Length: 403
Image (cartoon, one colour):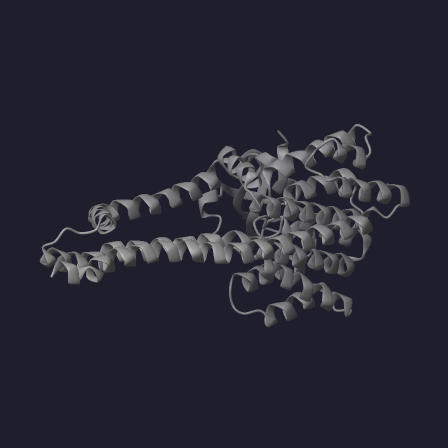
């Protein structure tokens, strides 16, 4: 297991070399290693506490907001403004909130003389390893504005792709949830009102109506327990995904096996891998380090493991194209693009082209899937509701024979 997969997030409080109070977040494998990292940065940690992952979503900054901040900062640096002044102007353009507070924290630390990349590493929940590495490369090369612009473009592409995939996955869930709620309301609220009318008829009811009335009685008795069980199952599933890496990886493997939806997830993972590798390699990072960042950017444990295996092969002297070819997860088109890129010295350009290809394919497949699922789900919902209504009105249609 790669060490990077065992990183934890710690919140720390301490003082710098001048005795000024500082605080932030840092990633490390243990509390002792977190203190050692802070010490190497010239910080004396007075308190280091592990941050629980179950609370990690609270107060976080959205990815699209990070992309907006990066784009604005790159624009101001390109205009020739100093970094501290760029922070001031960027903060003024932001609405009051978590992002604005974070920008002001960054501004104060940079104004005190700390490197921008060092300050960013204190907030790993908002700025990942890829972000910090590219900023560090920009500071070392004197091209921070260029690297930030490239990073902003990468974040914008990633956010757009994530939104498209999320839409493809979310739409069926929302429609099915609405169908379940409508059906439950009919059984619990509407059917009992008809049951009293049917009792006054004094005649034998059709079989379909009897079954619906029995289902309604069962639903009225058990709906609180069913609602509680469903709510509890959702909470347990979320908690298990956050706390258990094994369960999260199991879910991600099963997601890849789903018909149609699995293909969208695969294409999205390939697009993220290509885009991240192209961005990091073009920034001057060694290919082994670039692969490490790309592994985490895939968003899927299966592809992350495959990329890390390719990185291990690359470290032994195997070419990247050969390392990728060893896994069935990387299609022949991607392998051929890497082969041509290695031979022509345009690996970053061809990887970016591959990212565009897979992102467009994922987008097209997601739209097609949504277009196909919409009438199918509507038909199922119509059939369920129609059956319930037919069962309720069938005795009324036969009322003439009863009388």
